Image (cartoon, rainbow, N blue to C red; front, side):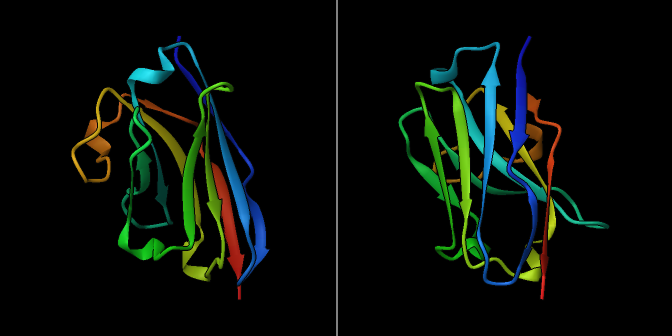
Length: 125
């Protein structure tokens, strides 16, 4: 059974940093596309960043160099380092896995086969 378990969310002040982790199990780690989504209250869930099996990454425009997605293949763990956080980054953040990545594009909700349970990130001004 595929499991994605996020951790690392919390509350920070604007300008602060958080590191999200997603521990994955139950599938062939090296064969999938991994990504992070977020969903704020009243808004649709949307892609933040994704990394393919070769380590190629794509970011949403609003990331603007503030976030870094990475993965540790030895630990089957996906990360999202978030720096210079802004109040508008407040959302539930979800780890996601898909069979393939779309070339140079973020994952879409429809692409995702597996979701984590989500971790809350709250940024105060």
